[in-house]
Length: 247
Image (tube, rainbow, N blue to C red; front, side, top):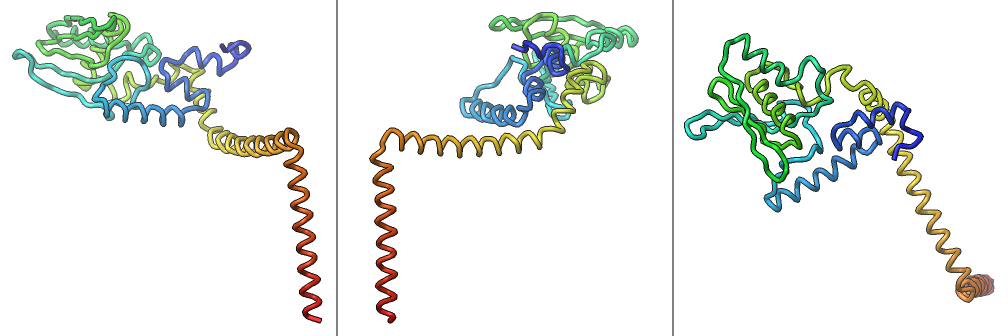
């Protein structure tokens, strides 16, 4: 699909994208994406349907999601909706790596992972020191679902900053970051240009339809001309009558 754009900054940024939201941003369609996503969310509320898989969009930080604590069969369970997006991490700060380091340094019990498969999607939980941590969003692989559960642990324990896992760190995806900045600057100008072009095309289309109608129906054009001439003659007659009356 990219063809000659593959070696351009935008083409390389496209290959770095991980969600539908990121794809829409680099093509200048973020506003359209947000409007359509809002419509879908309204539809889900009406149908009482919750989206539980598919990497569509990510909130900007943990402040925009809820960490829920509950009891299940006498065990504490911590839940959080987050997915593992590989492009949002450096090789040295992967969730399971940070979790294992923390467990080792603090001599905690675990980690122990378990999995549930639903419609070929994976949901994982990790148990550390008797507490189970679960991501409520599903993944397409067992390995990614384990990383998602590890992210829940790190945020619940306050071991990482609020944006960890939600947005890519500096340098993780250089082409996408640069193209996103450039697109944001051009959005206002491009949107105004698009609106002007739409108006111009609409006017041209209207004129084209009028000409086509006249070409297909010469009698219509002739009748319009005769009507116009009769109107002009009538106006001239009325003016002469008014002038004679005044005299």
